[in-house]
Length: 467
Image 1 (cartoon, rainbow, N blue to C red):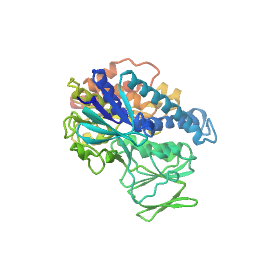
Image 2 (image 1 turned 180 degrees about the horizontal axis):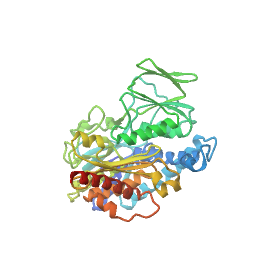
Image 3 (image 1 turned 60 degrees about the horizontal axis):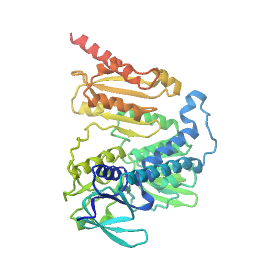
Image 4 (image 1 turned 90 degrees about the horizontal axis):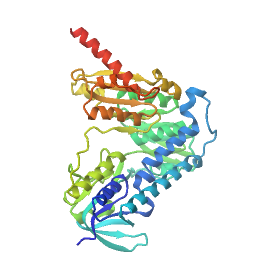
């Protein structure tokens, strides 16, 4: 008889939820993770610290209050790294305690160390002291996550040449910074450092940034960042990064040279699978360390599952949690609802962005007719009260059945607001529901009613001309 019904490698969002779901179903469950990484990358170097850092930046710089109190408004003049990390350390510590308590309450055994496959049912646990012990399980869930991908040509030192893991440990706020990569992580940090007063240059080999987002939303973000003195170098690739006594020099393939105190690389993520010895279990990972799974998150070996960032897109904490829960239920023979195809995306730039459904460009490419309804925060009483005159909510509506095809938001509370649109879309609601609904006043949620009225007025004009 195996030691456990389920053994989970990794305690991030996916691993936690898989372990707890199986434990709730009465299974004997164990989790393996390094002692300093309970909660995974998400808690220690990813989602939680970066979002906490963002809140600290907004609070200390007073950036979001400047429309109300003037451009010189600032809560603290000389912001230090200690100011920024104090809150982060507190939140990480509390969240670690919460996770440890949840696992304990659900009688999940927690092993400190790293695991590798001996065979498809056996894991060799290497503990902190170096000794190994064998653990067997009927089912195994791989939830080891990812690390930042590092180009071999770049010499990272953790002080002046950084990745998204060690950018949180900089000794002081750099006066100037080059960020290589205009993806989600790169843009979130570009916003934070620009808000702190760093002169930020973003280098991206593609023609633009955040190409999964609505074009109007991206243009709005670009406007805000240019206002914070961010420079963009699109269509440019980095040839070399040189470290000098007075800072760094980023050399682009076009010949341009950009001096800065620090460089941060955000060049994608690499699956943490190198040390798992997957071949011993009959598995393999791709060049980016990712593992292929089916719709139930099973690997090629049916009793071994993989969830979270290690399986690739969308690589979000929210989706990883659902994947972990679904994998555990499937492994335990329990029915589980399929994850809804409509999933919200939240990007914690300054201002934040969130969307669900399709963009205008996607609908145009697919030849799907749509009408647009827009609400601007400056039209809302709550927008004036909080001093956000630039936020916007956009609804994309089908002229045929009046359902929502997409919702796109930029501004304060965007990642919260999007869930109203998610609920209406998920339940097949129409724009008329939003027109007739009563929203608390004054709120940002009222933007749905304003945008819905805008869309229905446009639809009415179409109907009149058609008549």
